[in-house]
Length: 337
Image (cartoon, rainbow, N blue to C red; front, side):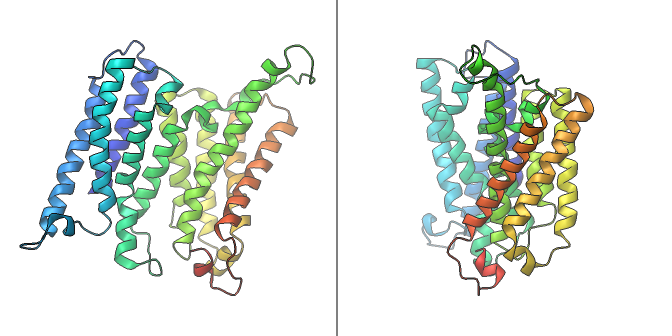
């Protein structure tokens, strides 16, 4: 139930972001989109309180009746409420943010951290129930990982490779030192950086799911790519090149999930960097193919292929770091824990 309410909260966050992007002139804190978010928080708070009360034994202090995994949820709910009041004061004094400043506003970042704690309830509960050695990806735990990734996609939308669809933008190489070099290079630089950031956003939760069990949950690649691609697109606008790229990447993630089901846990554990690199290369190849089909590629081969290679390298590096200093003689499950 907590994770289902988390869907409400996450969609309300993107809805509020959509309003700020498409309805300029919002100069008040009291909007229907804020109401959707804060009403979701109120319902979540009531549900959390009821879970604590129903878990309480006669004469037991409420602090000791908090179900396993819900302490972070309580902190998140309380912090969200306090930060909401601070956010109201912030807007009344300094006004409403309308662009990038809205995503990096201190009060908004605190609200995001609060939601992160709430959305992570399913993972904490699953770990408390089975322990690290017996952890299994239950549906609530898997949904928690996906929702937390989606929240990351919201706060990093300004450098999303799915929203930008950078390879579709024509690129004219300009020699270093020549007039207009910086202006010509900057869109491509931002586009290249967006691939690396979005790669990390997908790979980190993917590696985490592998580190907690013998193999990734079924459909994890598709779920992560979908939430990172489609929710930001729904918020920013469905442009043809971006939609085609997201569709190609999602289809590639489905193929990756099918291939992952054929890998043994032992092989996956010992070759995780290669697996994550192949996953990322497949996803971005699907995206570039989708963009090429709809609008054509504006980047030269060296750039879009280089973006794929760099992203695969970042993916492999993150997977390698996850098992840093672990003994080779350990089982794959232990190595990745």
